[in-house]
Length: 226
Figure (tube, rainbow, N blue to C red):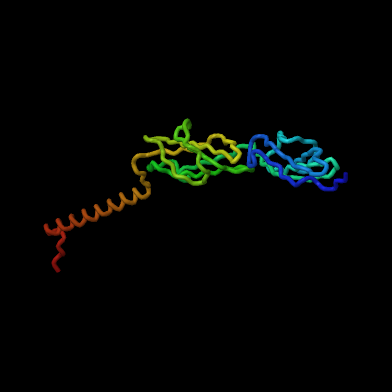
């Protein structure tokens, strides 16, 4: 029997099929109506092909995207390739940078603005959560670089804690930032000095006018006779 026809086209399946910190598993199969399937070989990126059976676990891949090629052979030696891409990220995001109210050291507002910066070379930051004490955190929410936050009750130093994880589920070390809460409105010293100086000048002018009027009534300020 002559068989010059390649096996049926196929596409391997990766599990998971997106970013992961675990070892992905590749499943594959195809058929050949003439001579039947003899076996499969698998290649990672541009490496060597080696015999493989489905399902096949890819162990110890480096971070990044990898193209997996599975080659199917029939019993006549004809072959066909199928490809799938896997996404590996085992490195947590970092470093995480958290800033409260653009780096101010103190505030008289309970609601503050948080600015968050996070780097991740592969899958990228996906989720974040917060805490006022570093123990219990809020539910995970989509990562954004700007968010309002309510400080805990009371005066004094207030520390905000943040956790960030990437699309592969890697969590960065907890980051934090501190600001001092003051219940009374803070005043700018320069503005306060200007206000006090202006008030003092007004008082002096009013005092001089009163003094002038009183002495004028007593005749001390009458012009001399010509």
